Amino acid sequence: MRRLMGIPVAAVMVTACVTINVYFPAAEAREAAREFVDKVIGDEATATPPVEEAGDNKQGGPSAMIDGTTSSLRQLASRVDLYAVVGIGSAHAQSPDISIKTPAIQAIQARMAARFNSTLRAGFDAGALGFASDGTIVVRDAAKLPLKDRASIQQAVAEDNRDRNAVYREVAVANGHPEWESQIREVFAKQWAESARSGWWYQSGGSWKQK
Image (cartoon, rainbow, N blue to C red):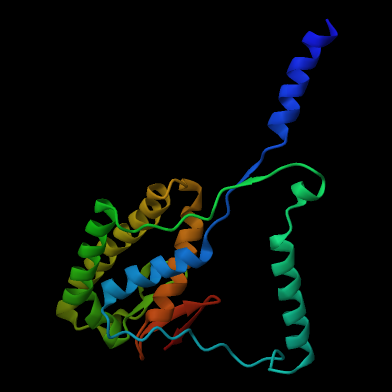
């Protein structure tokens, strides 16, 4: 009787000794977003990060030293497997590459590139459109658009936002993790701003800034 009772307990213990940890591959997602965005808005765009306002974190200052120490501790913590520390094995799934080469994603990308070159680029050059912080495009100042072009550009913005929402979802699903959609959207939103050309507008921290 004791032997029979011990079998399920042993099975549970063996099962509990293996855990699967899948982490969101942020670096790979940023690279995929950069490739996607640059193909949509063109190779001439210079991917320069938005300028951050100067604060206390100047090089060599106390805050910079604290931030550097905190960053080092976080990197160290990320390498520590707590399950291994307590004697439980951990089967780590390698961070997967983020693929944007599926037919569905490439079809969306082609539509967005064609739409950007034919209609949306003029709106950005005029200062009427901007990249929102949620990864969409907004008409921030319609008065800067010629009256005859307003309806077509507003329609193009609506169509592009549908494609944007679709591609963020499709990238997550295509890579086997639908739950990553919000993180994919966040990475892409930052990339649109970073790839914006000089004079274009983007949203950061709830306010609009010009590149």
